Amino acid sequence: MSLGTKKHKRGKNAMKEFLKDWKVHVLVGAMVIAAELIGKHAFQFGPVSFTLFPMLYCIFMGILFAVFKLIPRSMMETASPYITISVLMLGARSAATIGPNLGLIFSSGAALVLQELGNLGTIFFSIPVGVLIFKMGRSVVGAGFSISREGSLIVIGDMYGLDSDEGLGVMGGYVVGTLFGTIICGLCSSGLASTGWFHPHALAMACGTGSASMMSANVAPLMDMWPEMADEIYALAYASNTLSGIDGLYMNLLLAIPLANGLYKLMWKLRGQKPPESHKQEVDQVDIIEY
Amino acid sequence: MKTAWYENIWVVRLKVLFVSAFFAAFGNWIFTTKSGNPVTPGEAALPLVVMVGLVLTAMVIQMLFEKIPHWPKLPTALYLTLMNTYLGSPISPVADWIVANISKIQLMALCTPILAYAGIAIGKDLDEFRKQGVSIIIVSILTFIGTFIGSAVIAQIVLSATGAI
Image 1: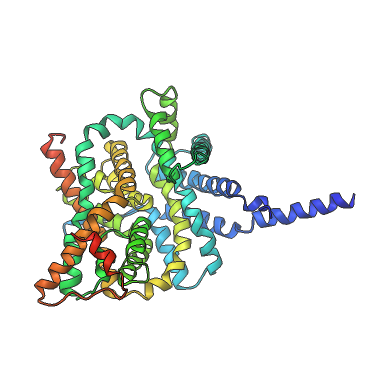
Image 2: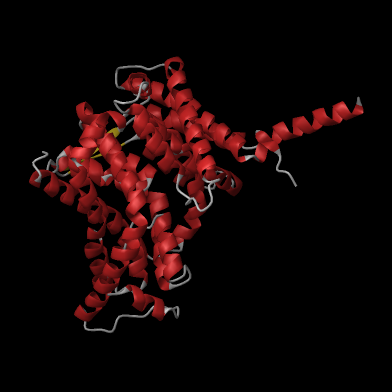
């Protein structure tokens, strides 16, 4: 009998542990309802119009919670691993779009594969700005060679160490991306879409960067702007995102880093100065990858 | 020592998936009502449960594959995508049902709970953000914009060149 009571008690405590994180989930619920009730809003900025979607308000709310210290750190730490689990629901949603649009994905195959190289285009933009305007040292390579997601952290961590200047750059990019990535993506794609320069399919392929939440923020304004093509747009964006997830690591390692390194040297040459070295002695490894 | 049941990875996964699905049902309701084609949480329940089932199936498949020696560690999303591509494709016997039902869940409504978890977790990185130099912040933002524009330009050129658009 006493054994039974003990067991019961243990069960109750375990249940308490199981429900310990209820505050996180209730807050998520409240944020979702609030964000959806506010609904989407568009604003005009000259000839370009930007659209904000409910999902982005959740990020704004999170930033406000943190700035005004409204939620304890323990809640933030509890929520963090839940993102990776819940984001899989987006993958499940793809069941309804990828399969029926396989034909479109295959017929767009060349564009889908080649636009992956577009991820390198940003290097010609970020490194010159970093060196010529901000006179940045090696940290510009870390922050500017990619969008600094987990895969980039691995590559930089492996090649230079995260405590090097390059590591400092990629960590900075990672933090900026975590905080503002979705917001930047949402504004960027709605802005670019409103110019009318691009076909919705081309924009859809550009949405896939290897991060599911950023892909969603990118794709939402497009699906809203072309509702009759919404499924096609999501299918292409999802395919491109999956592709980026697969090729990202190799692209970073074999193309992006050598390109960033080369441009870094060139830009400092343009300035007529010797490029600053990284503050960590791993020059040998750097030389191997540069060509 | 054996892990307590509430710390078991599968229990946590189930809990988070069902909570996200639950709130997505209500988010979806508000979202679809605003766009004039309401899908009630009751109607959304079945597709959402199926979606949770798909995620769990992918996780089980992943676990089984990873029992094979030297099998590489691949993201769960990859298993899920491959499985779902088949399920929704014309050769799948359940394609019609899957497409008709899962389409009731709006992608944008589904994202809201995910980004709510992300929003709560964001504070962790805020202090780190404050430590960043302005130059790193600006270069990072430029990188995000440049990646999107770069891909869009190439896609546009290739699509036009191949006559796809």
